[in-house]
Length: 288
Image (spheres, rainbow, N blue to C red):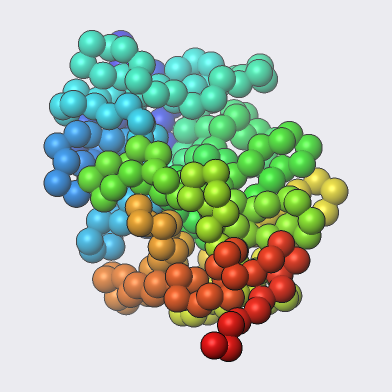
């Protein structure tokens, strides 16, 4: 028999949250629960920032398998797998199956926005069975990696929603392309639409960070290739790939809960369009 979670930020084995209930991270920054996007009445399990208006959803579990009513239940089973059940007790979404032996698994919602399933008492990466940061949606959050784990083959990338009312997989993706020197590329379907350019030590050449105090990193070694930006104590920021393919940066402070929105200039700057720039980052404008 499922028990409603007795902790604000975690789920133990056989505990659950139902539609209308949420988990809230220890610092009160992040919340996980059920929501309906835009004008839709369908229900999804999502993660959002607690005190930000309008609702800023940064991750969706069942984006391709919505609930048609408010019957959803999220639970953690004895194998350390998160399961989302519908009204007929059928599993419509679950986290990855772990190949490790587990003992007393628990799911924690962290202030970073990462929803983590781990086991044991040690607080280190070796104890993590699954984490939402390994499966981004349309939003890159501070501390989330965009790129490749070369040892496991895991690729993390952004994928747009189908529309503002539907978080199902859309047309656009932002990925790190490993051909040649790794670059951040925006795709429309299988086709390259634009690129952010190479890393200059502070940011990508084509897209310097327009709005914040955040620090950006680009890591390239024998184990990993990834881009990330670090969290700030006073400023929150996320990068979202919109359904129309625009890169949108939202940032807000601890004193101001309404995000400011900065749109990327990539669609207006010809030098970032793959049609104008070759594979070797050579850009030629037509003076006529």
